[in-house]
Image 1 (cartoon, rainbow, N blue to C red):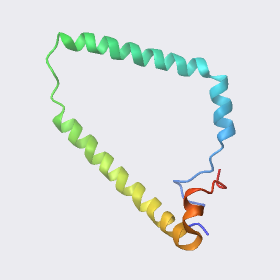
Image 2 (cartoon, rainbow, N blue to C red; image 1 turned 90 degrees about the horizontal axis):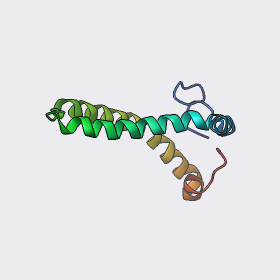
Image 3 (cartoon, rainbow, N blue to C red; image 1 turned 90 degrees about the vertical axis):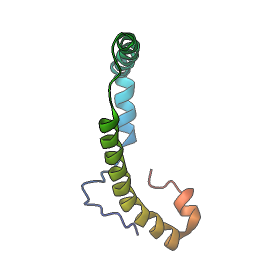
Image 4 (cartoon, rainbow, N blue to C red; image 1 turned 30 degrees about the vertical axis):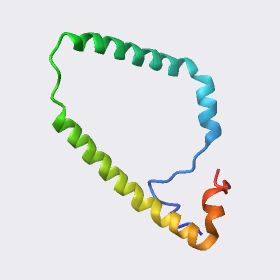
Length: 101
């Protein structure tokens, strides 16, 4: 039995077929964003050559704090599930079994 609550707002059933279908129908949409990203990297580098560097220490410290909080929350959800599966069903079920897919 899973320790994950089925009515939790954090977990919804994953339907990979609908995602694959969307990607195959909208590949030009994704390609457009890839091209825009590559253009922004090139143009951003050219723009920044002529300007002074940004002081990003505070912004990066906030980003790292947010990432740490996110990681702690993620671990608090996944560690109990991993411990439950390992203790009740063993290592094979925890690592190799893909019946949830």
